[in-house]
Amino acid sequence: MHRKGFIFDLDGVIVDTAKYHFLAWKNLAKNLGFDFTEAQNEQLKGVSRADSLQKILNWGNTSVSEAKFQELMTLKNTEYLGYIDKMDDSEILVDVPRVLDFLKANNQGISLGSASKNARKILEKVHLLPKFDAIVDGNDVSKAKPDPEVFLIAAKAVNCKPEDCIVFEDSVAGVEAANLANMISIGIGSKDVLHEADYIFKDFSEISEAFITELINK
Ligand code: G6P
Ligand code: MG
Image 1 (cartoon, rainbow, N blue to C red):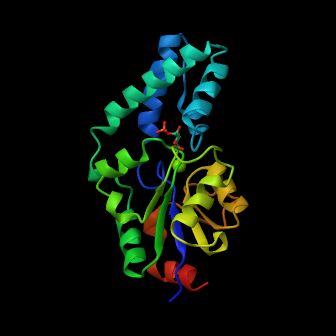
Image 2: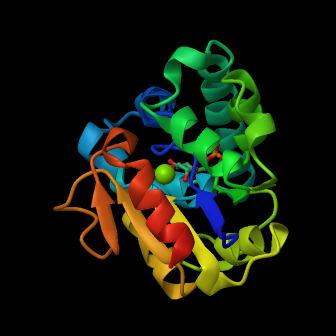
C-alpha cells in the first residue's frame, strides 16, 4: 500500500464557518456605515483576514489608517471567536470523520492546509484535532492562496512529495494553489465554481472508499 499525503482545507471543507465570518464582517461594515452582502462574502472564501478587510473597505469606498486597520481586524476576530466558542461536533460537515478514519486506517498522511489563524481552536472545538498528523495554518505562511506555500509546507510536514499529495478545497484560490503545487485537487462544492479542480464533489458523502483507494494506489 502506498502512503500519500491528504491535505484538507478547513473552512468550507471540514466545517462551515463562512456564516460566522459573514456575521462578523457584516457587523464591522455596518459600524463603518455601509452594507456587506452574502455575495461579497462568497468572494472572501480562502482569502486571508487582512486581504478580506482590505476588500471590504474597498467595496465600502473607505480607507483607514494602519492603526485603525489593525484595530478593525482585532474587533472582527473577537466577534468571530465568540461564534467559534459555541461550536461543537454537530458542525462537522457530512462524512468528514468517515473519510479521515478511512485514511488513518490505511496509514495515509493527514495534514491541514488552511489560511485561518484560528484553525487549531476550531479543530479543538469540534474534537478533530487528534485526527491530523500535521496542522499548517495562517500562522505558518507568508504568502496567501493561490500561492502554493501552505500546501507545500503541509506536504513536507507528513513527509510526502507534492506529486504524492491530494488536496480537498472549497475555494477557487485554494484549488489554484493545489494545482500550482503539482498536487491532485479535489473541489468540494459547486462544479460551476470549482471547474479547475481535477475532481469535484458536492460534499464528502459523494466520496467513496473505492475512490480514495484509487487515489492511494495511483
Ligand atoms: C479561510 C476562510 C476565509 C478567512 C481565512 C482567514 O480561508 O475561508 O474566509 O478569511 O480563512 O481566517 P481567520 O480565522 O484567520 O480570520
Ligand atoms: Mg475554504
